[in-house]
Length: 507
Ligand code: XMP
Image (cartoon, rainbow, N blue to C red):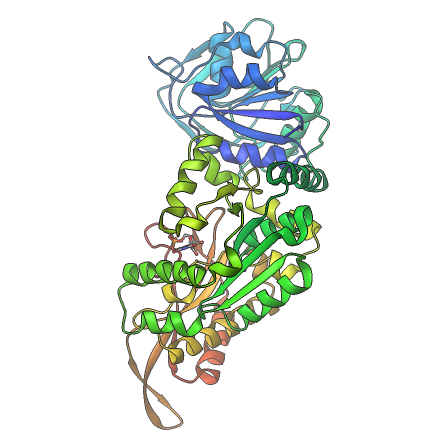
């Protein structure tokens, strides 16, 4: 990427990825680098600014994460938590082990006007540290304190070095954006990271990488593969072939929507593969979750094999890798390892060169790109949906009848979520069908039917999640509608469990 770079050095903090996201929200292209690789990356990229993250270690410990501070000379640098302690320790200040850990919300005091800390819109900040800076390095002034932290913020404007003991990147520091924005301004960033610029550059990069070649793009109807397909189509037109396998385990009417969206909005070749009866047949009588997943994976491959005449001959295979996958794999090059791993079960002709047009983006940025490419809201705002689809939401055997029940209940739940304005706060929401029966009474008749479980969670990244706090009246209303409108259901439950200990999906 040719944008000015804010390099975030990861000292092992739990919020490091958030710093990267916040910088990008401020229009600054940002990447994360593990501290061991930081010196080399700084020399190589000459970033416009560096942010040193928090971390669980003590700078006073043997083997603590470190780097040669001289590499930061002349580069505007913000140290956060461990990052501030590192700056203080390595520039001649004094860091001491404190007896107690300071953790939670604090009010800043003695905030110096005109300082970076002075740009917080509220003095409430989030602290999470053991050690603390007792005395700043020569040339630095203390710009905020708390009763238990003599240097809650420090700075040396002339040397372009700033430090804060608290975490401006987390939502518990409500005015943190102002502080980061002030760093962006003082560091002289042009704020040139925009959706439009990303699209232009990526389209160029795709054309360079693919040359006269062609690309095969497997699409699921999910946001990532759809946006990847739209970007590829913008760059290469009908030299892109999008293959969509309809396994019959989508939400109500969703396959039709996917087919319609692709035909209307994405000027690539589109190959829909109707595999509904094949998947149903393969899954008949299967109840064990892992076995369901394996069968579904194998059926996908068979579908591609059967359509080899339309799909073979492509030079590249598009993958919807996102930046968090790249970070998780350790470094930008490590994503390839994951790719090999993913294509392990594919036929030989599908082991193509890989193209990953979204690998620098976070999920919310992917949505922005989709919108800018003219994809409709219902596509761009789609929730994450598991590859095996309703198979992991229908416990027990998968039959046409049980798919119908799940789809209808799910459609009512999500219609009400949208109608009553709950959608913005929800990460995923769905109805699952359990494989037990219970007794009920309806119109004076005994019923013996299956229960639906409603699940809606709040989450930032699907790694952790908590149940969405619907008002009781809302759940009551949805439960009434489902029992009355969906044949075969006589009870509705709401899943209150967070992740961990539960997972988002039931299987
Ligand atoms: P869990 O259930 O593990 O899910 O909390 C975390 C996220 O992953 C999605 N998920 C899947 N996605 N294939 C997928 O492509 C799968 O087999 C699968 N299982 C779970 C889930 O919807 C959630 O977003």
